[in-house]
Amino acid sequence: MKSLKRTLALLLSLMLILTGSLSSSAAFDDFSLTKEEWQAVYDKSITDNTLPMLCVGANETELNICWHADKQTAVPQVLLSKNADMSDAVSFTGDLTPAENEEQLVCRVTLTGIDENTVYYYKWYTDSGWSDAYKYESNSFDSFKMLLIGDIQIGGQSYDNTEEQARVGYVWQSVLSEALTKNPDISFLLSPGDNTSTGEAADEWQTLLMPGYVRSLPMALAIGNHDKKGMMYDYYTHMPNEFFGEYFEGLDRDFWFRYGDVLYLVFDACSGSAADHRAMAEEAIALNGDAKWRVGVMHQGLYAPGIAMLEPETNILLNAVFQPIFEMYDLDIVFTGHTHMQGRSNFISDSVVVGMAESGKTYTDPCGIIYLNTNACCDQGNAGYLFPYTAYAFENADITTYSTVEFTETKMSVKTFRGDNSELLDSISIEKTKGFSDNKVSVFFRTALYRLVELLGLIYMRIDAVVVAIRGGHF
Ligand SMILES: [Fe+2]
Image (cartoon, rainbow, N blue to C red):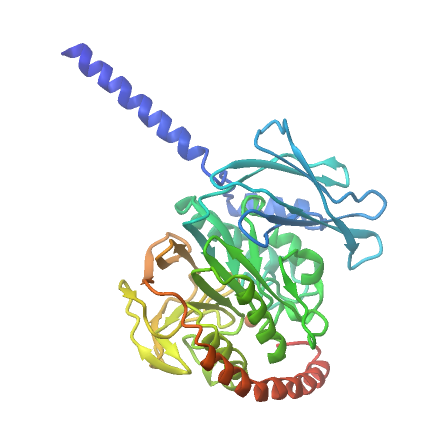
């Protein structure tokens, strides 16, 4: 009996060791840092601008990557292997495109043939030869979980302030650490924009790319008004299916990608070119008729908690430009940011609340769209229940948050957590038993009506160009 107990105890210990080793080989290695450690990393690498950005690909079997390299030695090449020693690596070659300076080029490579539930290692060609090998682990493609963090806004509200840059960078590093430790099954990160403060400083992107976690975390970053103050987004990101439209100018662009059953439409809400936004949505939807979920992403917070909806730009202009597109194409949810206030709307259709969306509940085939507004890394606002469309508002300023969105074939589960201790703040699930309405008559009439918005959008763009020139950039 005693030896049986001893054997069982031994088996149990072995199981614990095994479980421990399994969790330590999770998708994300532990890159958590103390404030002092982060500062040391920041001080060491802030003068450089060559950290790579891993981006989502056009679909779940692809990954995009880009980095800056010396013009004399730049090679847009990445090695990808299923082995940590990089044996049997496959080589991918991409393009060299101009950088924002004369000395460098931007290397852009797309990795294809990514399998689900597979551990990969990759290296890219740096100014001093091959980089170290970094791990990327794919999860299931059919059902997956994504991470949502908004207004990373490296640099906060400041201009050329390294202290503030390092501080916001540490918040970004910490919330990633918290979110990915508690959710090691995250497949990628999506942000509704304002990735940087001034949009024109390379060191803002270098800081955003400093956390070790982002080597293993593909990102899809929308453009926010702060990014729009400069052109750096163009040189430091490599988003899939970028859509430059007919009327977009400068940095303006939308993009879309597909992940499993989900189609993501990412809008540059700082451009009033309604015609281009609608054209992007139309094209993406036509190419993804089999997607089961449609997600919209834009920076400014339509139906966000707080007073954002009292701003004419959000309430009139952006509502007129985007809300009809979301209705026309029957989107399931829209992710926004900008207000730095965490909150979520009730079900909204054509600007009217058509149903309550209570926290903790599951709704089957609801009418209307939910708008989820993200908090920020740089500073956090105190959200309130000012409007009837607000279903949830996080009323604790100074604490950042993150959300996870999990998709299965029939269910979408959205959860929002405190960024410091992962306490669950808000959750809602939607079950889907029907396809999209895609009512051709309704789409026809809505498209015809929308022509007026497209025309007004073009007029607005001309006025906005003058305002931006006088103001010296977007707000
Ligand atoms: Fe913003």
